Image 1 (cartoon, rainbow, N blue to C red):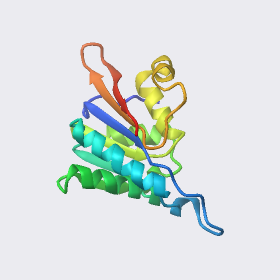
Image 2 (cartoon, helix red, strand yellow):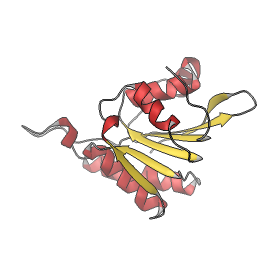
Image 3 (tube, rainbow, N blue to C red):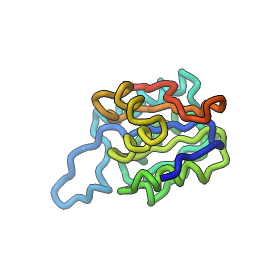
Image 4 (cartoon, rainbow, N blue to C red):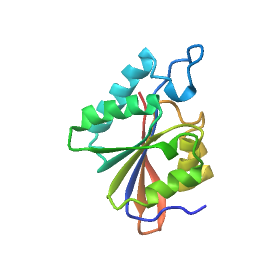
Length: 164
């Protein structure tokens, strides 16, 4: 597994907000956010914007709950934010997540995706000990990890973790 090197210099990892339970016959892919999830997505997007956390590019899974979460971020950040929807992020491995990030030339990239892969991507970037210390209960829904590249040490560091 290869850990990406800049660019980007900043990676935002946003786990989709809380999804509704599947209706009978509904595919997992098509589950929307719950009522709480819609509210949490708006709150986390507003908190990120208020802190000045603005990606140059947002890359989202095409699953409905990720598209709903990405929509909240887009509303909070403004129409200038480029959003790309990538099928490969749904049921992807951590290698896929990191390869997608590594392929970008923008300074700051946000991934909106799923657990457990989101948590695995963060752990791969910052290391197991830092991950367990920062998130002893795991990566919550609507959680936003802000990860910066520390050029002096050539490592990724968790700068902030924003929750609702």
